[in-house]
Length: 270
Image 1: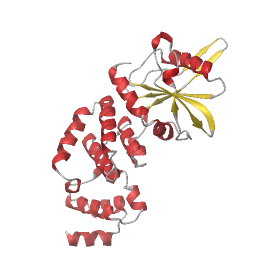
Image 2 (image 1 turned 135 degrees about the vertical axis):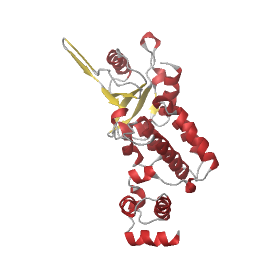
Image 3 (image 1 turned 90 degrees about the horizontal axis):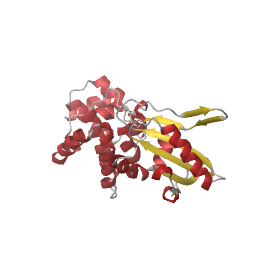
Image 4 (image 1 turned 90 degrees about the vertical axis):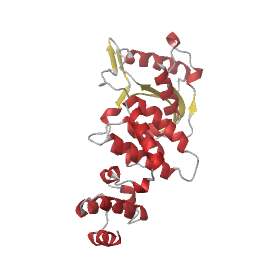
């Protein structure tokens, strides 16, 4: 691995629970013990993450590789890792995953078939996952992970603006913002977003989020959280900003959950 892979590995290792929960869809206990440094590696290579934890209420090993490029030998590496891990943890089930976050189209294979041999690991391409799925979860960890997903036709500047806005809102009562901004900045390198992220950060140093003309990403995700909680002050604030941006009433109604009557009252207040 190169330096960028190592940095990314250390960053994502801090939120392994969220990767297992949101990306791998595993029912994993929060009590995770990392054991990768104790394992000897063939050719002096170390696995990214090897964790002793409970999966589906059973003690198991989670082996997770964060891959930034296509490795033609990945399936053979994973098979060798499996053998080494199994030598030390004979009784535990081993869950093996490679999460691909590279810039190019994924081309790796996940199986090794030979005479009397049929090995397979789980290979996940983050570019096949819609970032909306993570944005709707609306937690700091899911928001930073969303930058690794497929943006579809979303504007990158608008998306990054929304993510940083929500991170500030969700961490305003504690000291976690710096941690998540560091994660966001590191992960953004894998999607060629470093320059645009800096542009957004520079822009938001000078203006308040409330002064932004619109919350387009909030529109696209249906501001699900706000709708579920009713017509909160946040929803009303978003509706006002959409009105200022000359968004039509029907669009505001469908995206905020406010009635036309409520929206007209807001018009009279502006």
